[in-house]
Amino acid sequence: MTQTQRRAFLIKALLDERSGPRPAVPPDEEGRHRLLRSLMNVRPPRPIGEEFLAVQDEYLREETAAKGVTDAADLTPAEPGIYLWQGDITSLRCDAIVNAANSGMTGCYVPCHRCIDNCIHTYAGVRLRLACAELMERQGHEEPAGQAKLTPAYALPCRYVLHTVGPIIYDRVTDRDRALLASCYRSCLELAGQNGIKNVAFCCISTGEFHFPNDLAAEIAVDTVRRYRGDIEVIFNVFKDTDRKIYADLLGVR
Image (tube, rainbow, N blue to C red; front, side):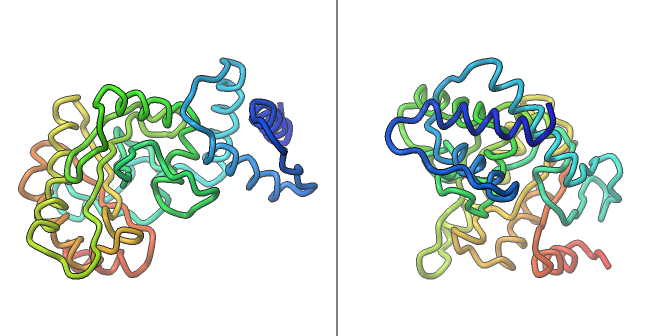
């Protein structure tokens, strides 16, 4: 199959399992790309056939390859065991990437939302939401801030995803907010160590949608990683130029 054929197959399969009115399939490739992502974003966590999964995984891997995959082994350290990398975390080949999740832990259901939770679930495929839902069903309650969960990464180039819920800032940053954010980094590192994970890429947890000030969040991230990383190599992943400058200053990178 070509990517166009895979996309058409996946869209039809997702539309066929829905009840009620069906959205029109756009005539252009970009429109169909957005429709497929939207259908994946809103799909509830439930099983789906093996043929769908095989086509989906091939489609997503081709999409990621087209973006360009970066191998963690090719990065240059900012200091021993710590790296700074600017790019799309869903295109990074490493042991584990960190997802800034919400308390429901099953991803972002807003079609084509630009948050990292949505991006990771999109490019991992629909099995990631189901795996997270099964974890939450066993847990029996929402995920508290400051903890971590581990799942396979499915169609992503990394091996695992570490999911953590950061604190949401409504007014000023409190000491508890600082402690919870530090706990996110520490919990991810501890869980990584327990599972033999050698390198972890952290996104900027709690910034953006959760409104933690970027500079303070970076200070907490760097301090916590320096204290608790042990033998695990850590990659600080940033997407925006402003975040890269903040981390570069903290790590002494020119």
